[in-house]
Length: 195
Image 1 (cartoon, one colour):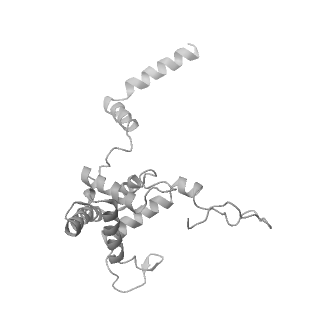
Image 2 (image 1 turned 180 degrees about the vertical axis):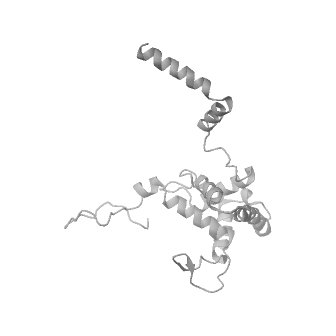
């Protein structure tokens, strides 16, 4: 038996060994796109997650949240790091944000103009207490205020945005410390941390 015949026979044997469900799963996973809705959210919640994330980090000279797949990051973090109770609270928070839009503007969040969305999120940001100070996982204040949905959502959005490869490579300055020492280094044309 030559090498070509051996490879053909091995491939045929491997194909027979795989069940139809495995092949179907492999093909369906392969064909997934970013337009697919994560299983943690329903269609409405997924639209809200995308829109809120893009409102927090819109496309300007730098890419927006949707372009960097921040909503997918949020879905992954909610699904893989939160308890079932926290997941349910997160999903309910999305519904509550929509209700607040209706109360303030008499329209659902997704129907609001860009300026109205920004106004609502700015108010929620001002009204939401910040995360309490901690040291090594221990909260340093007594009876901290509970973390609101919006504070948690904004935190996940910014974490996903600033930890993306494109932002890290193209928009933030990374200076490895300790690194190579350069006594006289020109500072023209480099990106700044706050741009």
